[in-house]
Image (cartoon, rainbow, N blue to C red; front, side, top):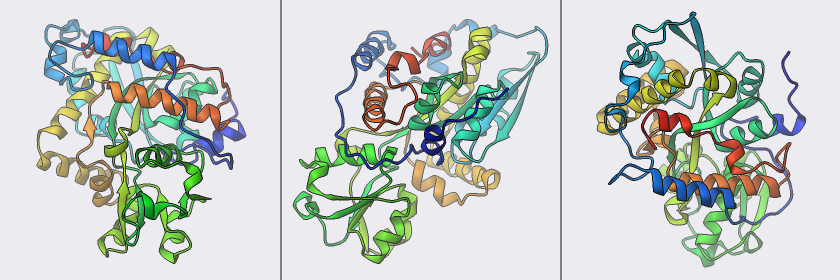
Length: 369
């Protein structure tokens, strides 16, 4: 029987990459001890001469035992999930990479499309979904509510997806003081906004925060002087010169993480299959990283699959840091986001720690850690 989503979780994952809204003001909290330990482990275990998160499929595979692994047990139908914005797994399925990776194995794959994070969490909880991708806050909220999955890797991270966009008259931190800034409080955009302010030498007290889901309308009408939200939403206003990006993760050292999730029961039962799925996603990441032409082909393919505009993908993900392995920055940000969510009362279980949301042994089996 499916678990019923709590009201808080439903709000928290109503958008693909966002958490829920709350009026409480918070400050970005220092990373958890678990985050520090995980970061140290990442530094110790990364391949010689290779930064964590930058291992390619060929480098990671090497003499890996997965090269010759074939599953010949009872037939398995593996369910993959997508919400029309998280895509390496989608491409791995639609471009035939998974079929190639699992040639000879007694497995088949099904791609299930969902409207939002809550629907994905319900499918995980009922055992109807094995792997999926969505934003780190939605993932953490679902893990906190015990929906039966963990973060086993990532698709990419991007420092530019949720910038602080301001009108053309604001050009520096001094000009930002006292300005009305629109953001959906309690979301990834809110967390990132706090880090941007810190990088500019400001705090939330230096601005007037306006809690809204309609950031574009308020910014366009002049009711606010800035907004933190998905970059693609402001494309037309940026093109006309009415607004510009004042800050993003390139200055604050923060990023938005597209988390790769695995159903715990499935992963524990089939660790080699799980590792091979991760390796297949890495193949897509490597292919996209090879050239701008490959990225354009990927975004064009995704536009046809998802009915989104190709420009949406190129704006949101162009130049992103693709790869299944979590980088040192990712681990630090996950720790900070977890503390941010605790401070904003966004978790069903406020006692969870970073180790409770991560399971990185499948990356090790795949040869990436």
